[in-house]
Image 1: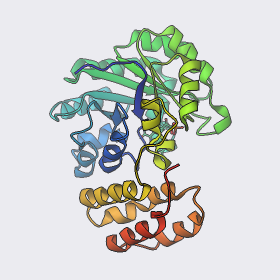
Image 2: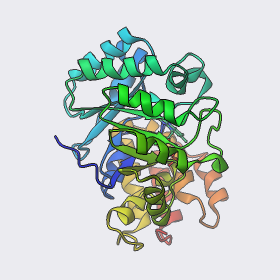
Image 3: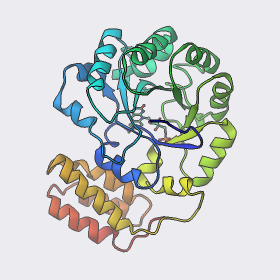
Image 4: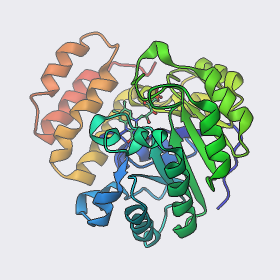
Length: 314
Ligand SMILES: Cc1cc2nc3c(=O)[nH]c(=O)nc-3n(C[C@H](O)[C@H](O)[C@H](O)COP(=O)(O)O)c2cc1C
């Protein structure tokens, strides 16, 4: 399997959101690569059912990336061996960006940006033991300060096939004003492998702007896709036009797939998706409190039909 790193479009891993039903829906809008939610390498080692469900994919998802988090060589190696037994995974990605204290304060996720030698060694462990064609890494610009040049050097010392760079440090968290595309451009200039730029891309025009500013080989979009998954259609087709689809049908299909995948509990899990889909529509706040009180799938389906039937995708 060959990946063409030319204006590549990736859906960002979003823990709690980018499960199979969401990824397969977004895939229809033209995204090139989908990524699992972050999987703890420790949980993978325990073969937990919940964790294995997180790496199930739709047949449409090619290439499919599984993102693992961890900082222990043996645990990472064992995770790779477990993933080697699963067909349909094309990329194993190492999470070096998660800022959550329960992850980063133990040296996992963005905590690895404080020990770049270890980061390189873990990437190389994945590359050595993986039977998948690609190994990638997702980084931020640093932990408590920006270190783009150090990160670029580390990437050049590693066996990673490509990198995704989120343009903030760990301590920047998700502060909008902290996004720094120039530092992404600096890393891109120094490295030999393809770079995918990430952070605050929420429109067709912004996507174009970030590609130009960073000279990246592609872009990754996360939160904007929760509200407007069709953003990938516009970028892929180089158009400001929207796909000829009805919003209600998109939301219903996503909801039905949630129930298929998770059973009845998919109904409660879908509340957060409805919050995103309803954003910026009149009465969104009211609708939010309505769905927060619905646990029955049939009732939720009816609420979707009522709320979205006169709504256009925008
Ligand atoms: C709710 C949520 C969950 C996230 N989960 C992950 C994750 O599991 N792995 C990861 O590498 N990044 C994760 N991120 C970071 C995103 O992948 C992405 O880097 C970040 O949201 C910036 O991109 P955006 O502005 O397009 O959303 C998460 C972000 C959010 C908001």
